[in-house]
Length: 122
Image (spheres, rainbow, N blue to C red):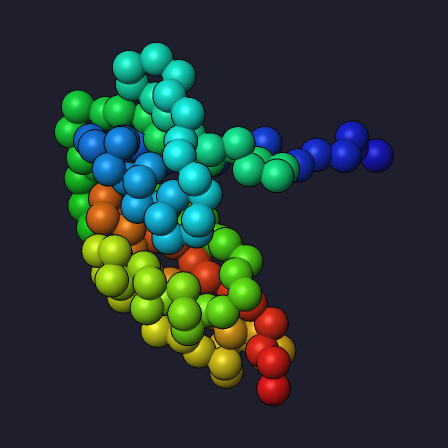
């Protein structure tokens, strides 16, 4: 039987990590990120670390290799907030794709896919 595991950290590459961390901090009310040297900063969340690493150039192509999902109180409200902060819509809020839940997907200002999920109150 494998040992119990959990995701400990999610690190996103960014050409502008301070700006990207600020985007996530404002979008999810995370406060101020903590710097760890000149090329990294992040947030110590309840059970996961969300960090941002400086890279010299953006990744090529128009897709990110993974989607980071956030459980939120209101997908619709968070979706609008993210768009106001500079995100781009990928998949607007939807109640049909995952019964009992509302989901949406955006791209953050660096092109990373960001998913939102909440229970459907209906």
